Amino acid sequence: MKKIVFVLMIVLASMAFSSAAFGMDSSASGYHPSAALSAKAKKKTAVVTFKTSIRCHNCVKKITENISFEKGVKDLSVSLDEKLVTITYDPSRTDEATLAKALEKLGYTVEKVKR
Image (cartoon, rainbow, N blue to C red; front, side, top):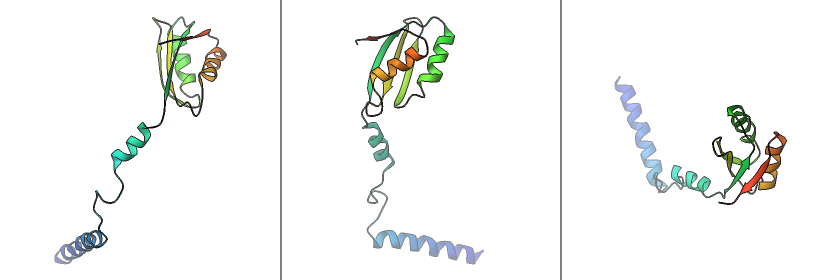
């Protein structure tokens, strides 16, 4: 038992020494989890809303299951009551025309709504 405690003390001391010797601590290492999140948050996104001809919950399911996998789509919401599809997307990967064509390919009429 004494040997295990001794070995752990040596390991911890060497880790503390190596970090101090190189001037490294958690704040100086250059990596912060929040920095990675903020880099992702800085990516540009755009939002487009389409008025569609959806009629039922199956239409909502069909759109959700298909459009969410389109290239560049980040978020998707479908309102059956208002017959609106709102898509948040990465403009470097897709555009409004491509998204409208994807909805039309599913069999719905599409009209862009100005918001």
